[in-house]
Image (cartoon, rainbow, N blue to C red; front, side):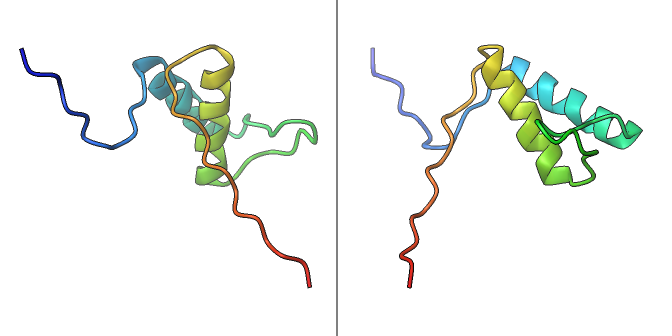
Length: 74
């Protein structure tokens, strides 16, 4: 039996998808708030990030975060 070849793209679990969906709904309703500051979230991208972060904490299948690029200070 041949080994399965991965397509190379990131894979998310169903639980992660549910968390993001929930965060998007809360954003639309106006009840989604960001971490420590507790400010209301309006950005779509931020809502997705919060949903994925929640999913990670609950142990859902979410690919690792990408490392940020380092900048040289001048």
